[in-house]
Each structure stands twice: as C-alpha cells, then as structure tokens.
Length: 330
Image (cartoon, rainbow, N blue to C red; front, side, top):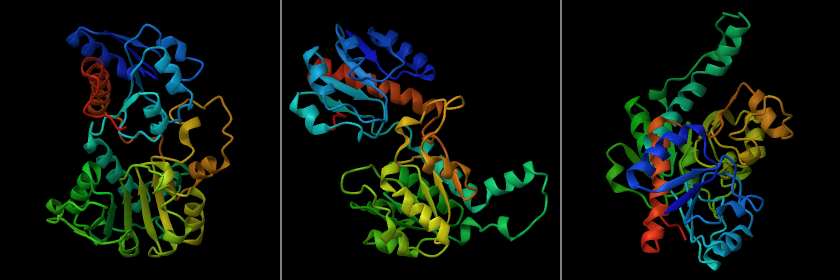
C-alpha cells in the first residue's frame, strides 16, 4: 500500500514516518498542493492525503479518479475547500479529521480573547516606543465582568466556554443543536441575534457552510452591543471582513481577534517576507491596533499535528481496505 501526502510540512514528517513504520505502509511526501499541475504525481499510489485551505480545482476529482484514486483524505476538520458534489460525481470519497485537539483551538481562542480585552497589542506597541505611561486607551475590562456568547457549542466551543466560565464569565450559547449536558455552565438562547445582542464578547466556533457564509454581516453587527469584542478561530468566510472593519471604525466593535481570514488562502501559511502583499484589507487588519491577526494557527500544537497526520492517514488506509471510512463527509 502506498500513500502520497500533499502539502506536507516539516513538522508533520516525523508523525507520518512513525505511523508508516507502525502500519507497514509506504508514505511519500510532497510539499506542494494537489493541483492540476501536480495531479500526475498520484499515478502508482493507492491513496492521497491533502492539507490545504485553497479550493480545489473542480477538474481534480475526475483527474484523480482516472489515475485510480478513490479518496482524498484531508488533514483538517474543515472541508469547505472541496466541491463535494463533484467528488461524489466521480466516486471520490472525501474525509476529514473532525476532532484532533479541540483543546488546542479552545485555549488559543481564550488566549486571543484575553489579549484583546487586556489591550496587549496596544501595550506592547507603547512599550516598543518606550512610552510607559498609563492612560484610558489601554485600560482593560475583567473577564469575570463579561457575558460571553459561544456561537457553535461543539467540541471546541464547549471547551472555550468552560475555560471562560472558569474566569467567572457568564456564558450563553447558540447552536442549531443545543447540548443539554452543557447547561451546568452555559445558558442557551434561541437565536443568533439574541446571543449577539446580549454579549460583551463573542467567540465563533462553527464550520463554514453555504448557509452561514458572511453570517456576521452589517445587519448582525448592528444588533450587537456597542463596544463588543469578537474572536474568530473558526473560518474566515463566516465574517464579512468589510462589515467588521466598518464596525471597528464606528466603535460598535472595540477589538477583534482573527485567526482566520476569508481571503487567507493565498497567504496562510506562506512566507511573504520578501514578497508584496496585494490584499489591502489584510494589510489593514495587520496594521490595526484593535485587531489581532494570526495565520490560522490556533490548532498548531504538537498533539494536534500528530492527530491530524494520523487521522488523515488512517482514513486513507480505511478506504483502501474497506471501500469507505468513518470520517467521510460526502
């Protein structure tokens, strides 16, 4: 059995080699993405594992099927980069890794929330300028005085809510499928609008779908409290970035922490130190004192990387051996 891993980072290789030795399977690494220019490389392999945020070319499914590949095993929880209808049309099974380390992302969401309510970025900029004064621009709130809305109360949202409740924050939750086991620390509300209108801090934890693209738009921002804080460690496309910028400029939103950005695929995780960033909105987000932007890195812990690699490879192996897999998404 031979598996080709596309988009392989250096930090993934050790986990992949250990898995390959344990399972007695040949795993080959390719650092680039799976595209129509690289699809010929899958010839002679039994399975493919991918790790990319950019959308796949719609022709990729027919191309891999023609080369004998029956699945694409993505090493992430999100799978919005796939056209599932096209994949199914060509009998390609797409799988994800639905749970690899919810703690990693939840902890990062909490860290990001603390950073923006404690004005860490503004304070550090003042320090670098040797301005050691105290003033109203850097005075902070305390988490225990805040009402936090967790939007999406699955594995990651649940842990985020638990940690913030540990600080003493009041937690409200919104989810299409409320989990009654969480009501010991979270109070569910019936609508998204009700959740955001009550919240001092909003933390987003949901997959990107056709139905919730730009869910956080101008209309929803208008329903929020003045001075609200926003944390997004989910998917960039859930937030209309221009509407967020308008809300920041008006003071409706005090600060935002964004680990994802709706047009990130050309930039994250790539080295642009010697390149020009053409995306003016991304540049503005990076430069603002009231926005913390990170490169889709909330998941990035040793535990999560190992689980993602093994999860993707396990699904690839499962499809080869059984014709399907537990984590298929189409």
